[in-house]
Amino acid sequence: MKQRKDFEIRPEPFEASAYYSDERILGDNCPADPEWPREQYNYDKILDSLKSQLQKCGKLFVKDHPFYFIHVVNENFLNSFFHTFLIRHPKQALPSYFNVWPNVTFQETGYEAQRQMFEYVLEHTGKMPIVIDADDLVNKPEATIRAYCSHVGIPFIPESLRWDLSSEEKNGLPELWHSTLKNSAGIQTTNNSYLGVHENDDLEKLYNASMPHYTRMLANKLIVT
Image 1: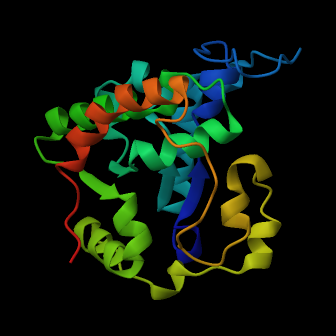
Image 2: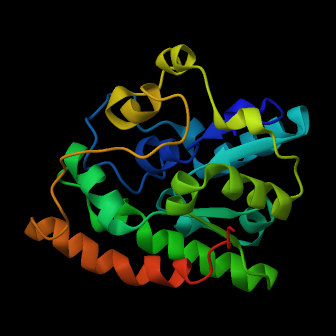
């Protein structure tokens, strides 16, 4: 979305609420900081800041993890966004997560909260939310993005599928979580040597707990031809 140039982007604004605010719900895996908690990261303040930004820019794309905010979702929250869900098979996502964060909790894998948010949106709108399968996005990026743009009513911009490698190296994103992005110039498959989901007891437990939530959403994914 960043490469489209017609949307402003806010990546994971509610992460600060979940980990660093007066209302924090997480944080055991984060280092202590004498300046935390901070009231300006509270959920209502972050939501207000997003609405204010949207009023100024006209088009705002927000990417976030539902486990950061699922407990504060209400009618006002649901009405504030047009919701899209990106899913990835646990056998692919969990080893990657586990590789950099071996003490990750099931809550922080995000599968349960994502499925809960999916159900909230479905119940609230009466319409099936858009679900994009990461396998489709990687294997058929142009067709997937074309289909998505058609469904949400925005123009497809082919140039948005590529980016300048040097710009991503300077974008300030943490190397720990964004090394693949910083070393690529487009959507692509990757090779790794991570543990498989059945090669570690903790990883296998996360996998077994995640699969029902993933399967529920996969059954309703956007069909890409």
